[in-house]
Amino acid sequence: DVKVTQSSRYLVKRTGEKVFLECVQDMDHENMFWYRQDPGLGLRLIYFSYDVKMKEKGDIPEGYSVSREKKERFSLILESASTNQTSMYLCASSPGQGRLEKLFFGSGTQLSVL
Amino acid sequence: SQKIEQNSEALNIQEGKTATLTCNYTNYSPAYLQWYRQDPGRGPVFLLLIRENEKEKRKERLKVTFDTTLKQSLFHITASQPADSATYLCALPYSSASKIIFGSGTRLSIRP
Image 1 (cartoon, rainbow over the protein chains, first blue to last red):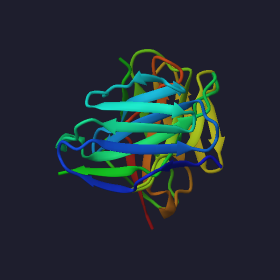
Image 2 (image 1 turned 60 degrees about the horizontal axis):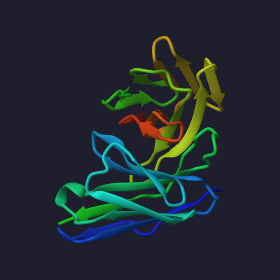
Image 3 (image 1 turned 45 degrees about the vertical axis):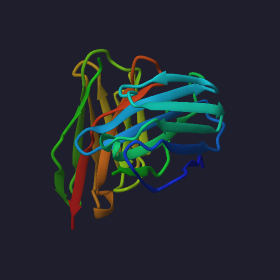
Image 4 (image 1 turned 180 degrees about the vertical axis):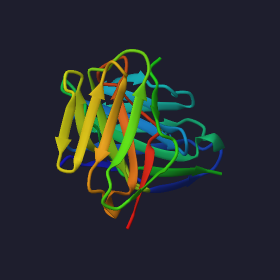
């Protein structure tokens, strides 16, 4: 089975801190995604990557950046954390290369910014 | 832009009945549509994918329909069980085939 691992289950940070959320997948998938999930708003796409060093903005990229130096790892960076970035962050991967895009999700990181 | 609408209110069903969840989308019709299950505090798990040229897809007690004229998908769970209680999310590809967007989900509760 595909495994998508997020480095932290719970994270508490202070306003203004630089925050790194790490995600690793073990199935050689081309595509990787970062979503955030808030009550009543569902999953919203922050960024996705379709290849190493390639990235594309999602619907809500402001305040975030990403890094994909290796195929299996996709990092989400909050340059200067703010309280409105308190949320559940979900990483996902999919095979890519034109195949139908079933997503495999990690367990999520609940981030609290105080 | 494409939008997805799911029943925002929770659905409460008696065990053994059929639960039906609705997913409506606007604008263009996607090449396929997906359904995921999400339990509290966990990531979504893929359940079913239905292509635009398929009217219906089944997997065990699950059935999905896809009506491109109505721009709607229905998700059915027959002989529902308390273990089916979860939030169910509809998803479809956005402007690029690799970019997937989600509805806000419908919370389903099956009472014994």
